[in-house]
Image 1 (cartoon, rainbow, N blue to C red):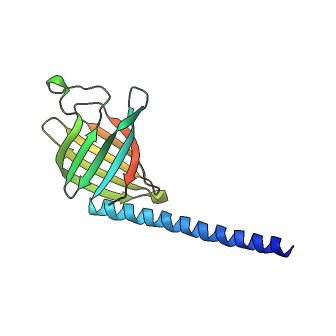
Image 2: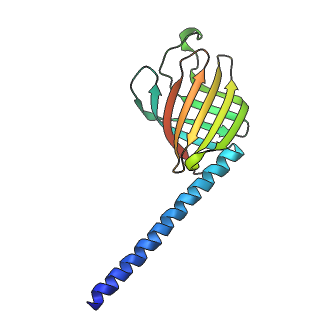
Image 3: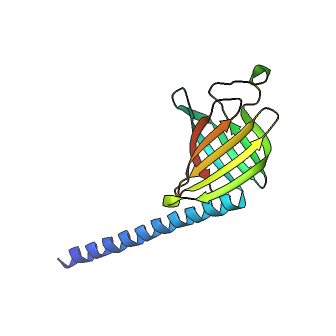
Length: 159
């Protein structure tokens, strides 16, 4: 009976320390995301494309959105309807450009919303990134000359 009590006590201590460690990791992740988005230096690795008029497309290649200082590096596939594009399809969503407008808001449940506006010779782009506390990210891209598209991915916090 004495050994059973000791075993239960040890299991309780381990469980409590594990839950504290898990909460600490979650808080550190949240702080890292807040700091990176506020500084305008972050990367989102994209795993799924969600075209408006089609099924989800699961991506195998390394697609991403990177924001560094005042520039956005968009390396995303585009699936959808184009209204007016250059001959042969143009660049789509694979381009580098300076950011015209950058806005960060912290929302309910700890979500962070980042809005980015940019343009290049082909189109104007409005990126809306919703970053959840665990790093999961939803990205919506609205354009003038193409139908909008959404993506899902994960925030890269290795920096």
